[in-house]
Structures are given as structure tokens and as C-alpha cells.
Image (cartoon, rainbow, N blue to C red; front, side):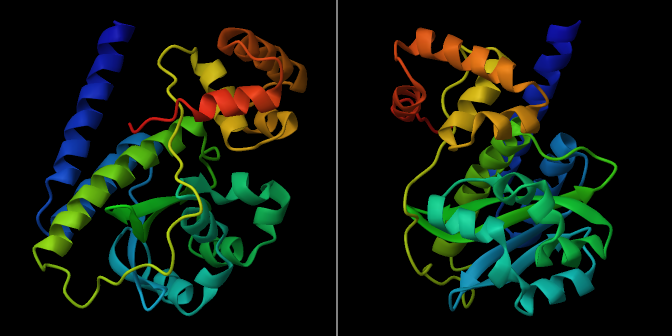
Length: 259
């Protein structure tokens, strides 16, 4: 029964990703992305931006108040840790994880989105070829828990599918006047490590190590003790045939794959 339910979830997600990638209009794309994000994270709120004159220009939004969108584009985006993370690493991230819970709740971005009832946000890159041309955001309310590694992996998959759709729209001239080359390539390309052969908890720890998190940060994020993280680290080192954290990170880096 459990396997059947998981299979249905995976099948539904696969169908949603295909629908995103095959979108041939901005409106169709936006609604497909919103549906996929809602199914995985519980919130349909999204903001899809493309870079124009080195600034994020809104392409599509769903379930987000216009006042929040206007505030973001008035210049709040300049202090957005997700935007910085996306453009410098090419990876997905959530603000609370990137800056820490306390710093996040004191940040300008948090004060901005909390006015409209949101507490957590998550974002990832939109690409055209090997260049980052935009960013996709989602946000959810305080009654939900913060985003976890599984949520970030889902966002990565949705961003990849969205990138295919955006590339098609750009190539067919459907975004004339909006598409602009980004200021730079990302400093490094990030993809989640292959984790099919790891248990969910070991995969969470492996992803944290790839992201450069400390044991305490990993423990806080996935809700286990520091000692349990150390135990999982030892298991991962044995499994990958390395002797320390540095060697493990390097070995995991060689196994980065596209979902």
C-alpha cells in the first residue's frame, strides 16, 4: 500500500514536470509550475522572474499580493540571499538555511514577505543553455515547517523543467523584450548528488555536506542530534572509501548528476 502511494506521488510529479517542460505560453507555464509546487510544498505561491538590465523582472506570479511584488521590485531584491545564492552557485536554496533562522527573521526580506502572511521562501535558477537567465520563487505560511532537503530537490527539478520551457519560449520569440543575458555565469554549477543508493537520512546528511554546512547546521535542519550527524558522516565515509569530511565532499562532488 505504501509503495503504491509513493508510486502514485512519483507518477503525478513526473506528469507535472512534463507539463511544465512542454508549456508553450507564459500563462500555461506559470499555472503548471504553481500546481507542481503546491503539490510538493503545500503552497501555490510562486514568482517567476527573468533578468532584465541585470534586475529581476516579473514574468508570472500566482497567489501573491501585488503589493508584495511591487515591494520586492522596488529594490528589496538587492538584499535577497536566495538571489545571491542562485546567481553565484547556480543552486536552489531557502533563505532560512542560507542565513540561519535568527538572521533570517531579522532580515529585510523576511519583514517584507511576512507582511503578507509568508514566513519561509525557497528559490532556484532558470537557465537558457549554460546561462542563468532568471529565478523562480515560492513561499509558504508560518504554520508549515521550514523547507527541507527534499523540498529543495523538488524545486531543482521544477526549475530544470521551467528552464526547458523558458528556452523554448525565448527561441520562438514569445518573450521578446524581456529576455536579457544575465550579468555573469554562476561561479560553479550545482546539482544534487546521486542519492538513490542512500537512505533518506543519509541522503539529507550527504546533501548538507555538499552544501558546506556544519554538523550543527545539518542537525538543526533535519531535526537530529549532532552525534547522529557524526555517526552518519562516519557511515558515509566508509561507504565512499574516504577518511574525512573533506575527502567525502570531494567524492560526492564527482557524483553530481542532473535529475
